[in-house]
Image (cartoon, rainbow over all chains, first blue to last red; front, side, top):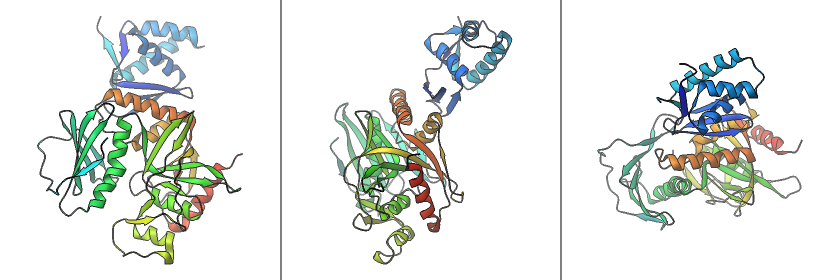
Length: 93
Length: 290
């Protein structure tokens, strides 16, 4: 996975922010997932429109007080996890 | 909706399609199977009844026809209709129905103090708990289906049947010498009355309690965060079509709204009649303002 990869959220997932946490429900499997504040913001960015992970990292860096390399490492880790669970899908163009 | 039509009893012959959804009891038994028939649904409750749901219109809902399995009494079919089919159709049409019992709390001043609901799987003790509260003077509202109506920002819990369906041991514990029923291994209908009062008007919902599945767990109460509550409540909903993404999204949203408005607790306790008084005390203590 690279920062230039473009992702969007799956059409089969519904999300809701509750008390600073984002709850995801995969409508296909009935499984629930929880995202913390930063994870929820990443989800929000990908849910508005397909974006590169580079764009997502830029926004997170501007909004949260954390070093760039840490943001990128955490973002890639989360994106891999979400893709593996088919909660986000890669756009090929 | 036009109500229930009960057809002739008929054998539950093998269906040639795989159900798109199945309800399974905690002990692994099949409770219900959901089959699609074009825009209609066939719901099979093994050894009890088949229900056909035929759409009338978006506004009018569904025609419901039931065919009892051989030997299944009509009262069982009507219980399934009331406790499964109606809440399924209620959620399908935008309502908020959950699997649970509820009581109307009478506070220390003798006034109505809001409704509390107990959500749990089958045979988790919901009805016994509602009966125990009723015996202490907190009338029961429902024993199996929580029907919530949002009005002016408040969730109102609607009263349902004025009957508690109890196994003999629970009925004996609650009614003692007043009990007049045979000792058989199925639920008895116990009518609300002076011993177990029934609340016949809607009451604002105050708290939700989700009963744990460990029936030997020590007594504990823990408040869920709203995200935890949402995950805890969703399995207790009645869903007709798990493949209808649009309705699932809307239902998820309604459930999330509920968890933001109403406190929800995890309730564990040992399922022992000797423990019930402690459970009631713990729940009532939670209801008291700090």
